[in-house]
Amino acid sequence: MPANLIKNDVIAALAARAAGLDNRGGDPRLKQVANRLLTDLMVAIDELDISMDEFWAGVAYIGQAGKANELGLIVPGIVLEHFLDLRLDEAERRAGVAGGTPRTIEGPLYVAGAPIAKGEARLDDGTDDGEVLFMEGQVRDVAGKPVGGAIVDVWHDNTMACTRSAIRNRPTTTCGGASEPTGRVAIASARSCRPCRPN
Image (cartoon, rainbow, N blue to C red; front, side, top):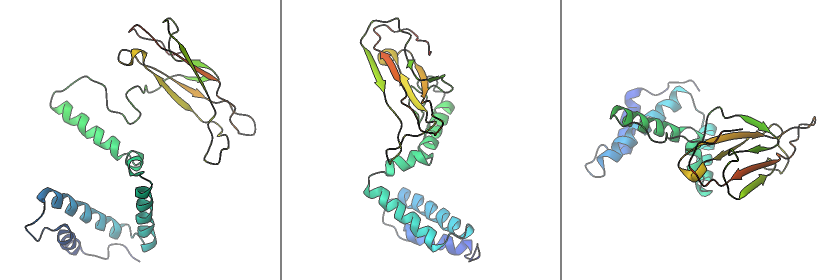
């Protein structure tokens, strides 16, 4: 079908009626939001010439995600959660609020550009006393096969509030493309609050 089959005034009237703008009952804010979202969705369907198969495939996907209780995973996956964080950060900036841990989908301990280590890595600087935790494993796909070239991100924060360090552990790969075990990652539980150096 060709795109832009429906005039904008027809879409506006249809969305307004579906949102309940033509009656006094209901929450005005909810109706305002529903009207806007419905209008934008109808315009997108018309302008992009979204087919019936494409539309119902999307509805089925959302339905399956709801049944599996995975809608909360889709929101960050399509960057909407990050967008909400950006809005909150900008609102605080305009209000003069500064400092604090930045909102990130990766988590508050994420450090962009952290060094990559192959095989083994120690996340703290090794100077504090404490029991050492060793982790090791292998990245596998949903069928249980090793994933070649996978990167495992590991974060560590001495005493949970004071310092940050991050290191990325990349599994080595064989010529066949299968990942070998990543080796061990050591984390020491620190007692003092001082910066640690990523290896």
